[in-house]
Image (tube, rainbow, N blue to C red; front, side, top):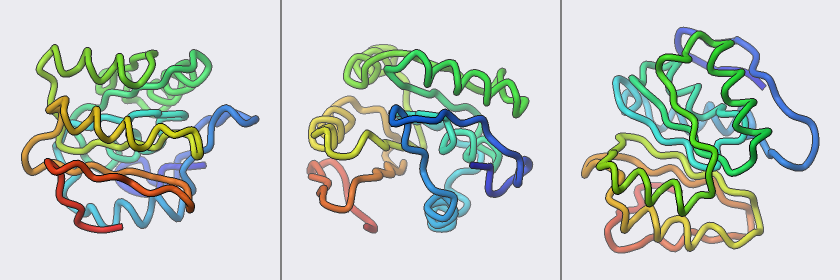
Length: 168
């Protein structure tokens, strides 16, 4: 697993073996960032269910100003921290080792907003619907911001009315 583009393109990320984390494949990252294009530049990023932090780190490499990484697993949080430090982005990232809904509630209470939000929950655990709904009501995304959801092949994303689905 590696950073695909930007100033750190080609650098390898630390990963974890086992079923705890399902990293986003390089080809999927390449497709997502190809679609996003310039929308990443200088924006604030939220990486929910961060795992290794690959999506948020990719955004930082491509010019995002700051990223918040959220994961409930302490091992994943330590891995994100190691990857942030290893890539030289320790001062441009924050890690919140919390359950998804709690982290979203905290960020909303703090008035945090983001230009780009990644939501890549574990497949098949029923988190897509409640997670997208929580994100929708929390007001974390700027009006022109983008939410990228990665779902399993047999899962559907129930888009709340406050979002416009541009592409699947």
